[in-house]
Image (cartoon, rainbow, N blue to C red; front, side, top):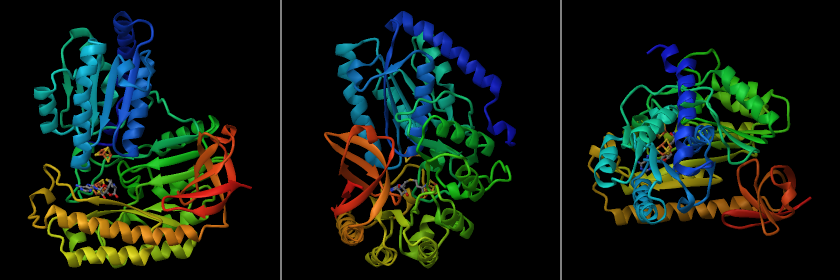
Length: 469
Ligand code: SAH
Ligand code: SF4
Ligand code: F3S
């Protein structure tokens, strides 16, 4: 596939807009003037960004959005396949839609999409066991939603579009965002790394980057419309710009977005340690709009396990990266993901993970118990450690991290942070510091979506408390 075929053509996008208009007519015949949609998103920010595009397409068809499936004419779940627990929740919630559909709205359209649906065995299960689900499509088909919905409305049949194909990039569709001041901006899709435990490369396809001009134009538009925080998204943003090659790497992209005039901040995720360059750390340090937060998943502290995981670095290399980053940015917050109980992991391996956590000093850690994923290499590896033992290790690691994080949080007391205020609840505002720590403080609703200087007055386990200065 050459660079050109990676992109959905403008003519094809126009065709989808034509389907949107046809859907609007059929929908108004069926549901009246303002059909309502309930969209629920599971999984990572990449999925949240997809849902914003799905909502854009639905809005083009005349849908408004509601907060409860009971009120909806169309219910759409955008699903995640990363761990078994995520999938179980989706099945449970899809099951709960059946009585709602039967009792409230027999005409209700139920649509399932996202990473879980991109797996053949899941789509088959939905086909067989959930006959009241009308529309199922995978991650590769998101841009074709108007056409798929039209087929369902027109023919009344169930529509499944979960074929294996090369994932493409669709530009120019509508986007409906939840909050105007906080924006997710995808810069690339897919993943080529095939970490042996991970389903993402199978359900998201090969890594592909958006044109930097499109990204910058979207960022400019966001800033013009009042965005205060832009988070650049990709499974491995450090390898942005490799395919197709636009001659712009991730550091250059960061510098160009940083140069957009306006008072806003930039975040990005996720960084893969194997592609985290000195240039990136130096760029972070020199770009005043880039926040002091690096999410850098290490997964394990054992070199043997890292090799088995196909991660492409050693724990010493990881530690070296963190030390370099702290040297350049002493106030940097590093967060990470870690997996406990990878197949064949021993107590010794696990203790190496604990050791790395002690050495780095993470501001927070997302800890997961390994979950076998159908079709991945690790799912076929012998996994002799009992679940109860893995759970005990998991708790041990969480306790270690909590103890370290509370020392770190306590050191913030008395410091003043510039915080983007995100929420208001009963006289209390919530925002996040540059290092992505949550902070709450008393204040008025008019501050939501604006920057405020907040002095930390006390530090709890998960959240800081403060006051406006
Ligand atoms: N692209 C990102 C991670 C995306 S998935 C990266 O490489 O860092 C988010 C996290 O889920 C991963 O970092 C990993 O810690 C966890 N994860 C992925 N697959 C998993 C599995 N099979 N079992 C348990 N945790 C898993
Ligand atoms: Fe999964 Fe590894 Fe790709 Fe992250 S880099 S999405 S963990 S395969
Ligand atoms: Fe889940 Fe897909 Fe994201 S599997 S974590 S929603 S890429």
